[in-house]
Amino acid sequence: SAVISQKPSRDICQRGTSLTIQCQVDSQVTMMFWYRQQPGQSLTLIATANQGSEATYESGFVIDKFPISRPNLTFSTLTVSNMSPEDSSIYLCSVEGRGTYEQYFGPGTRLTVT
Amino acid sequence: AQSVTQLDSQVPVFEEAPVELRCNYSSSVSVYLFWYVQYPNQGLQLLLKYLSGSTLVKGINGFEAEFNKSQTSFHLRKPSVHISDTAEYFCAAQNTGGFKTIFGAGTRLFVKA
Image (cartoon, chains in turn purple, green):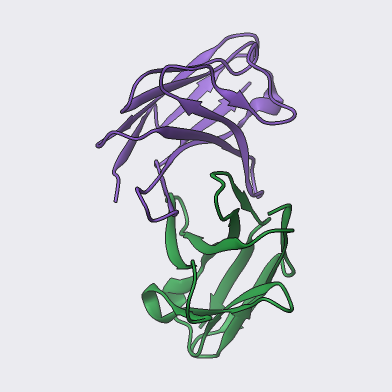
């Protein structure tokens, strides 16, 4: 299993500003995943972050809007840039358990943009 | 997996009644299948998973699911639900050999007294 923490747990931000979300895992992992869960909806994968290389973004998500860092095997950040109210969502970090194929999720960051 | 479809967005049920949450997937290759649960104001946690072997999979809290390859389904069942089972349930699939997990839209189970 993996224990994942995220900071901040929630924030209220003004439009046009940026927020950086941190994700810390208690063990070394190859890939980390960032998801968005909009109110009442399912999880949408934003990008996959590998240590030592650029993140791979899913269709509809771009690096300029959601830059990701992955400086080591236990840590990643996701920045939501130039925010608008449509970015209000829960942002989740996850990792895959070694050999288990199941995902472990952080508690999420609840972002509200006003 | 190309997509995961959860056929019911909401399922209200009385306490101690049986429940089935339906999930279908589409994929041109073999898949691993999962059910995750999200309790109110909490993160997602794994309920059960199918990787291979027996098509009937048992998970936590008395839930089970059956993999049906011919019908590309992975329905979740519980013979008797409790108020505490009220939560959002997500079906998910991952291609064997892949690393991306595709999630369904979720089914909100509401257990009434």
